[in-house]
Length: 403
Ligand code: MG
Image (tube, rainbow, N blue to C red; front, side, top):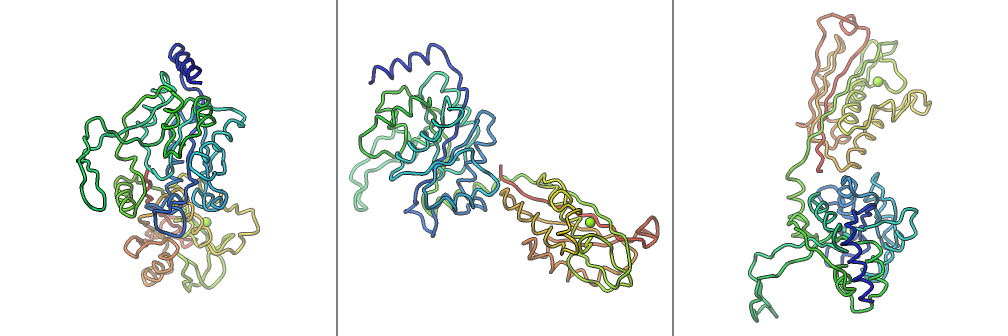
């Protein structure tokens, strides 16, 4: 058997085969018994986004990863769906009794796929941050090796401790910690798994070693930190919160006056001698705000999400539209940080309703009062707003995302 693998390695070395179709296999089938909480750690929000989803987003963003498979235990399928939201994997495989059975099931799922991968990156969902450089180096190593693993040096002094007592020091020279993702030639690791019958392992490099595959080590990263304890959660949340990318969006809307006795602005009904006309409740300020939020996250405009031609939205409360936009922000792993709204009209007076409008928006936006700014201006009796034909509103919104 070993001879066969040596031959495979030799062939790879000779042809310098570039990885063609690389699939990321994300292992999310663990029960996370060491971690608190009622659901496994890979599905619990970490700085707002579950680790399994963060791992999926990282692989999806890498140009050389062609497809993604997530392995999940049968009873956690719904938890996975909820944790991933709109980020869907290409394949889902069901986990087995132990980690290596779960990996085998994942590899089997990929073997049956329409395009069988040439290479696979096997990753534990408990490592939510995956630097692109780590993936680059692994893929480059696969040009000359059957397998590649990121490793890191250990800088602390190492001791063998039993019952709180130091028994002896362990020499640090030449000692490295193995991380995931670990990269493999697909057929080589699939066969290695099939033939492996020794004791339980904690990673796939151990199985590759047993099969005699040639293995490269690449530079790992402290950012690949594994979520194991509550302290790890705190550390990872600090890392994840450190460098967000701000996304800004703007919105503009106009509604004309018609007969009526009140206008609705930012969800507050303000008595007036006219009403605003529109398909919904014509809350011009909330429409501009909804467009600003959709704009920040690249989700088009309110009309695309709620077509005015659909009778369902006739007379609808605009809070439905705003809530939808806010939910999309959360689905994308973003956080709305502030909004600024300008209402343009001669009448009615907006100032007296400013606080009520902020209070109406607070629960919808999940923002404190000082992150919601509402201001009003007239247009010096110029133009359609100046002539009192309608009300215009502008809004901007900032969303933070962690990439
Ligand atoms: Mg509108």
